[in-house]
Length: 236
Image (cartoon, rainbow, N blue to C red):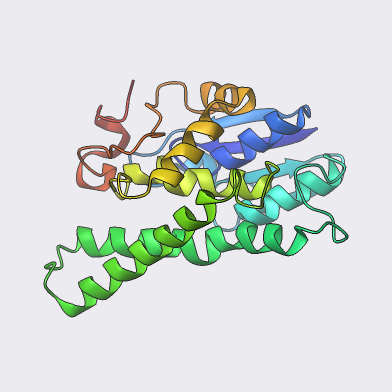
């Protein structure tokens, strides 16, 4: 049996969503932030050296694994018969690879760097802040331009690249409040992703209390500027 450990309001939502899209059986174990960082229940799991989520246990193969990209690839190829991943012979294979890895390689780091600078209260007129803002906006514009002429990130078909990206442009904004108004194609795409039945099931199972950030409007405050999950502004 595949066990998925999910931390609330976290990128492990990708794994829950993937399992729902693939329609595979899995055991979901939920962990609650304490009130921002990972709780001891997650840190103390055997094999979870990072103490973070996502973290999976595959009892059939005696495997434990973390890192969302690695976990998604493992599940796709071990349990999903390669579904939601492009095959090497597919015309869009290079596009799929690029966008699947672009999320954790470029998009998420740009968002997180901006988050830390905001928390550190670096003045907006400082050169370093201007460079970070330019990098974030340039990265978002790159995604928006892609979605202007493509329904999904890898092209005409929904893939795991989309699953990887949605967290960074939705739930991640609870930590990095960001107005997506200047990026209408991202907002359209988020709506398309959010309308998928598997996404709805995943979010209801993993984060039933959370108000989904699938529109342009950002949350009023970062969870890092409040009392984490003890605050209520993230709830429905």
